[in-house]
Length: 275
Image (cartoon, rainbow, N blue to C red; front, side, top):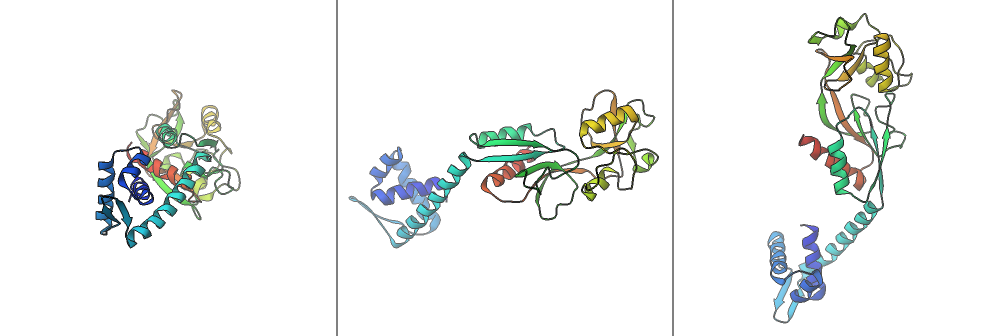
């Protein structure tokens, strides 16, 4: 049952007349009559007794009227709440969210969307500390206690200076980079996250917090970092695919299933499936 059809039924039930209900709904009578007949067919029961004088409700009609009014009132409360609401979205590691942003704005033009751009020290973008409602982020990380949806899987490569001896290789393995220094994240950073971006092995190297710190460290010191393939890091850097690392997923993570968060998750699933 669609909410629109329930609104049609409530109007007919309250007016006790198809003509008056059609006027109230600002529509013509024939499509209203067809909609109510289709509703009865779908439910497998008669909701209205029709006569030249108007309509009366059957017992089933009274039941549906009571339930439909409660449902429509609840739907209206949700709509009003969304119209006044804000949603805070944490962003980390995906530079292709423009379509999602447009789709969500189109669906909720009155919602204020707040963005929190996270650094590399927290792959949940502040989700666990309630700084965001939903995180558009990158894995893998410790997802215990979180709800997640994988949107895409991206192969991973080593970020090297263009003049690095390994930069012209088509593919690399983590063993090829064992003698290099690698980025480290600050103490207390998610261990699963740290291990993945260190190629699954203990490494030594400078501590970084932000993507630009990584880029500059490669340029100045030749430090090895990892990044999804396809990122444009400029002509002075190259990203060479690492064969023995699994892809990094682009992930939505959230904790509470509020109506606005659910809508964001559903919209993201639709947008990423179509790209």
